[in-house]
Image 1 (cartoon, rainbow, N blue to C red):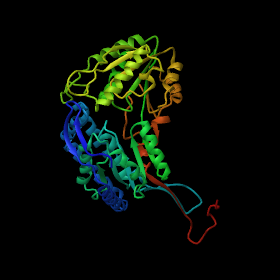
Image 2: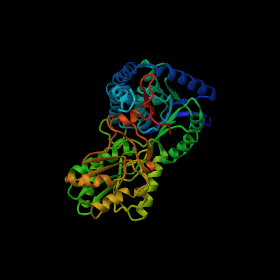
Image 3: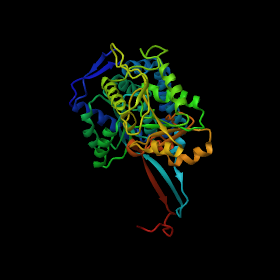
Image 4: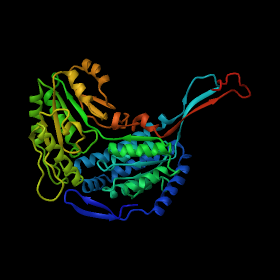
Length: 469
């Protein structure tokens, strides 16, 4: 399958932790068959019983939080406190759907001319999940609990640099008592994905990743008429209006950009600030970023760990270089640390225009671009001047004006006076080249279901039957 070895590499030391031989085509076929059989059995399992398995998975996540967090930190470099929070959030998602999900999946009665009619939510079958490395547990648990609760099975093709996390996730679902193979992890390279999408035992596809990969996967899935959910790239705007609480906005901006060492689709990346407060905001923001400790992600005082791969750091260096050549100014950071590990000192750039690389492209790492806007209308125009549309933050003390501006902001989510974040209770996803479909909330729970209309007329009486099309 084009991959001779799958390596788990510690990005803080560049040491190879473990090596895995990819699954052979024969092994993949056997695993998909096992998952398909498990999914057929699972769909007949009553909803309350499915929910109990989610509760067991949550209990395992909480009981093994320390070990799982250490695995995340070692395999992709996330600072340890953030890795622990990722495990907690994964458990919360399981608990949320275990308690709230069954009601959301119950039949919805609809008044028609029938004796009875309702909408049912039946499982689709087996869902292929192609997942990224940046939140190696949460990205998968954002998808898996609702998909499994709805009666589906799952086949995971995780990013090749987090194979141990991928195996640990499958182990959790096995130990939670799900039918063997219901959640299956395949250790394969990206060239295995086309055959998996084409496999008739796969009924739907979900992908979180780059826009380019998402476009290719969407084309393949569409060719086989299989539904997809795509959560792709982002260049989220963080709009600060002149009447905002600027110190609070600047403090929040540090976390909004630098969480997970800036390696998040929904990180704030473009800080669009009204010109009357741009200097005040930039000074406070840059001071907050400069105070962040860079280093060993297992140290509790470290907020910035290594980037997950060396090419990610190289891409950032290039984007900053092209932007400064075009007139941007580095206010703080922007240097590569000597020694092992893929470390990069977090940077804030100002005097950025929308066409510069750090604003026009997605920056996947600890680099922030500050763009000045003359007024709120121009700030929204700049925010929308991107091919992406995942999330957006708006900072203002005038909530009535916020209500007026929100409909014009092109994004799947708008957070006012807060940091954009995913939440099991709310639908999550984007527009434009950030993808389509939704995860989480009631919409995400029903995304991989057959939304079936059921019409039951009176026995031996057809007078109310709807006209045929």
